[in-house]
Image (cartoon, rainbow, N blue to C red):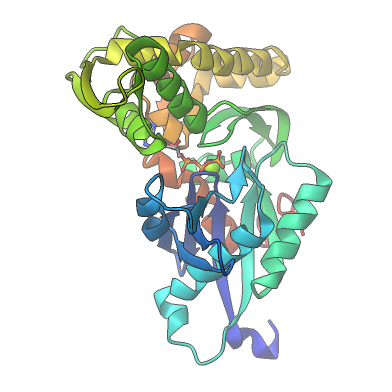
Length: 342
Ligand SMILES: Nc1ncnc2c1ncn2[C@@H]1O[C@H](COP(=O)(O)OP(=O)(O)OP(=O)(O)O)[C@@H](O)[C@H]1O
Ligand SMILES: [Mg+2]
């Protein structure tokens, strides 16, 4: 405890491809889409988060919306730093402060990240006033957030299906024993739907519409117990150029997503096949935990369960499991010292 510790604030950040979440004082204070809008003339960021997301696909030539992260890593550093700065400034308890406080932070990073990318994330955090910055691997944070005791000599498997990447990891004794990271997750599902609509219905739909389709009627299998109703989708007819509407069923979306889900299944199977036998025995008993927004796709848990012959559980509030775990690590930095990267 230093003398100036009262000037330091603690925050936990899940800087995701699709959503950025921040915990301060054990509460989620930021939960916003990872997107910014930039004025092309001045180069200034004019909006971030929800406000920028509303502009997506509806901009004119002077405004451009940017998603600073791609495939789970920062693709546009300037935009990502400005986005983080804005989000941190919006935290109600920090807004009231006279001076921008020094920050102790824990930020999660994908397990497949390179050394160079890791350093870049850290430097970015330091530039937004991070005085003490720790990094934590995402699957580890997800497991802590789900409530798994990762320090035990017991194997657990976690699959985090986010926007940019699916991270699969077997954890034991506070470490990652084997893992896979594939660039197939929510964003790819959305693009699969855009492609399907274009090729099967000659209908050109934007990203926001495709994501809506995914959430409203998306499915990982045609064999659903409670199937959603058909959905009317509007877009532009590719042949006539006119606006048009078609009705879509979840079965079509299940077909559209099948190949991508197969790739996730394969990655899970590969990870299982590399798991040491003692840990495989543990996983046989405990099953597989799912986290991330992509895990909410209808029937995905059932499909993975059939493929692996294991029980599959979706985390409570899967979109927040990672930031919850990151927040827990922040609260007990001493306890989790061995897994935090300084
Ligand atoms: N009900 C739902 N059904 C299917 N997909 C959903 C649902 N709700 C959200 N998603 C998808 O989840 C994804 C976002 O999940 P999440 O916030 O976990 O990703 P992220 O952490 O930002 O990404 P990453 O971990 O890859 O960097 C988006 O692609 C979104 O479309
Ligand atoms: Mg994530």
